[in-house]
Image 1 (spheres, rainbow, N blue to C red):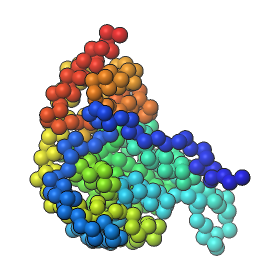
Image 2 (image 1 turned 120 degrees about the vertical axis):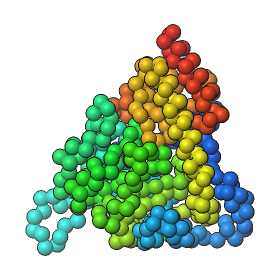
Image 3 (image 1 turned 180 degrees about the vertical axis):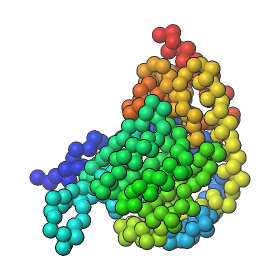
Image 4 (image 1 turned 45 degrees about the horizontal axis):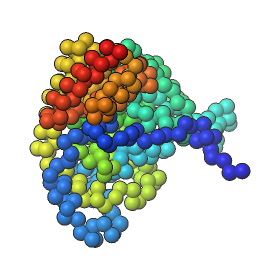
Length: 372
């Protein structure tokens, strides 16, 4: 009988988080403002040749490298950050390679460790488990901040990959650059991923990307995405950066046409329209402040966000609040299954024209819960 690898068979099925598109979707951290008009114009101008010929990923990598101040050899484009994570994890996790001259076989075939702190992006443990890695989960404290001291204490020769989202999802919290570099420097033999998917929304607290630190930290990788601030989630365009030598190893495992021609055609215009990105980010920050002021007024615990969403403890079973919002035509994310997030929901910031209705719906939903 045909059977999958044991690590796959043990996994629970993964289901798309998209439940319904019938209302306002504030549950997936997508851009409610859409994308730049320049990107839309480029999409409308696509020719037959643009979509009938195989794409040239390298052209996009050169554009992004120039924008980030890197060499093209330091940039790998992927079909969303999810694919970039898979490439990175597959490259460094799995059974330990042994030196043929090493007579000690005590750890032969042992899987490397994936180290991260809960709560965080669900794809880290999912991919680690699929690859048969030893998944090591640290636990954040009550404040849900990254437990830097616990990372430093837990790193060992078995640690092969460390994954940190900064700012983090689902908490929205950011960790100072100096603390992240301490972790990278404490694990020189491990790939340290800093996932900066929400970097553009970050305030002065984490306004420094770790991209300039790549050259001095050859084990460091930084990921970016076009799904959030650029509003291109539907095109699936992720970026992984690192030192050229390590990125070259990832290219060996990357299929040649992984990024589609439509996504590649939009990169130049998306990067060129930084005015659109700045305006969108400014709107998100104002909307984020609206939510945080509301939660403060209602006496609800929330975590100060550096992203395009806010995590809040609604003081009732989270699903009850989610359903109350659904009845008002707004989808929000039940985050209570994440460790430390019991009773919490995650709410994406809407556009200025949407936010008054969102605030009113939250007020009504909380009042409804309190009455029941």
